[in-house]
Length: 307
Image (cartoon, rainbow, N blue to C red; front, side):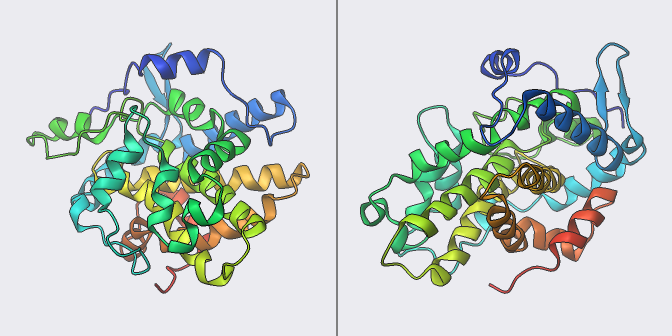
């Protein structure tokens, strides 16, 4: 299969890449960009190669597994979004995953934090008196920054709807994604959902009185991973995009922990318990993806959690 790079990104992404936003939690701009470069190298060798625009070719050991991984992904991602199960602890009258997807996707003011109150009544902002939308985006600034775009820029993985016709098959049905306007790997929603979502969970644990944290912690873990999972079920992202996103998120937290960021250890432990709750992770545990990064991630995260 002749893979072409994704190509031009949305103008908003291009503007951000001209002046990338370094995560506030990171100590030292030079160190951050070196870490991003290290991530590119590892991803290029273990899951998806980097695109060398000057030489118009792919670079990295993962060149040899591009086709097998893509065939695996396209096979796994055929389940439509309507088949993704809602968590048992979702509130009565909870919106569907399609509703959540469109809220989280658009440039019309929808935000991932808006879905949290539907997962558990104790997490309603009228109870916490703190807005999950604002909390989510404060966490995004603190942690994620422009990391996902900096990686997308060189990985240049084409989206599934670009690749599918290369196999000679008609395009499959997919949900329209207003934000599916950048290379596919890594998944920004998955990466940022994990980091900023874990940050929101930490703040609820620290700030909110009158709730049983052990009761709501699994709910918040599910919410964090569902944000990325919905993108796969909507056929906006490949399952292996989530592998890369989870792996980068865990490594980011490990890096800022080594720099003395006080909350990093809590966040990483939370995320290690959240990832096994992912529906996409469960699917891949049943049929391991053909890439080295999955082997490393699975060894660290372990088997899926009981619901």
